Image 1 (cartoon, rainbow, N blue to C red):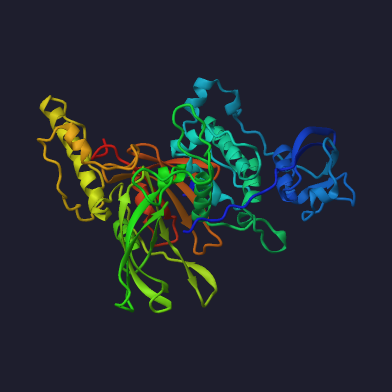
Image 2: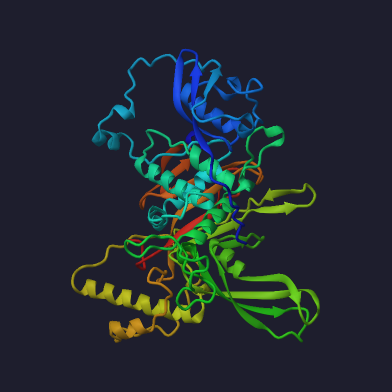
Length: 522
């Protein structure tokens, strides 16, 4: 633990969660109004009782239902537990540690002003059985303020099915916003609803011995896809609910639509296809969209720019109408829309036929603080970026002449070749003339062609079926926060370079970038 040292996934529908409250009799104590989700496994309810009584789940014996003691593989609905029913808990709590020589002052007893001083770090999330993949995803997604804003304005026609996932996510993020590291947040409700809505994340080990580890990137894509189905960016005080399942296309786009996922993360690509096995089939072009860049790792991949560039130029297999069979095609793409946030996945897990398992690719890949992506854009988008950047340079020059030099600091910039300067607007143009030469889809688009690194999800371990996920989030120029489940720590920004890979330490699996409004990090 650190403290010591695409396809769009289908969304499963679910019935409304049947929650009831029961009363627990434990020795001379009585716990009233304990929530019980009758569709959740017994293991989850035992975890709740552990937080209330400190009786470990393996020592718990729950009585008061037909058939004797409740077994771990039992079904609450089959047992016929009713609202307000009294259940008996048998088991001995863990022995409390000896009191410290100096009395402990609890965070709950501190005044609000002193509490902020004592614990400036935000709160972490409890691990409820191999949920580090989910915890790290939520902590990074929470750093996109537009997501929290849209969740806050989501009304939902009912609190059922996937709507329940969104409303419970909203409640959880609100709780995290109010929390600090003095007290971890226990996401029992959200985890239960999430696993019920997406059964692929509710797989258990053989014999029901706990939940299996899952993939953080699959979790990220699942949540982003759910946002795409239900939410849009709200305009003013209006709700963020999508009025239809097929929102309109974004301005100037042919593949991206007006949902929050496409608006915040969607890239539109202009792709050219050419059959490599027959000259009789003419080349063609198509517009495609993705919500993250998936970068496969080869023996030549050493830098983020190489990885992204390689993902835009690849050889694929698809059906050829001329040949009447599968054939190899050259696929080359240019980016025609840059979203405000850019998610880049390093595809570090590859299938091995000899072991029938996904093995991890440990090759180190460096990534910069500032990612300059202009060279990978279409000529039209490059021209718009050049026009916008010329305006920024003109403004900066005017500030220098007025005696207000803009503050700039050295920064790590992608060492990729500088973008070819396509017909940049001359400094003699008026702002109105320069504005007309720009063609961005939305006002929130990345107009500088530059992104700032602000979040990383890392994986530690050798296999996809195991290991540990951690979230790393930028706090300021010099410090980052590490969210290792319930433990939150602050580190120097320089330590992020340790996440490039090459060994058994944490290595970047998903990098998150946000647009830069200026040409440098001020």
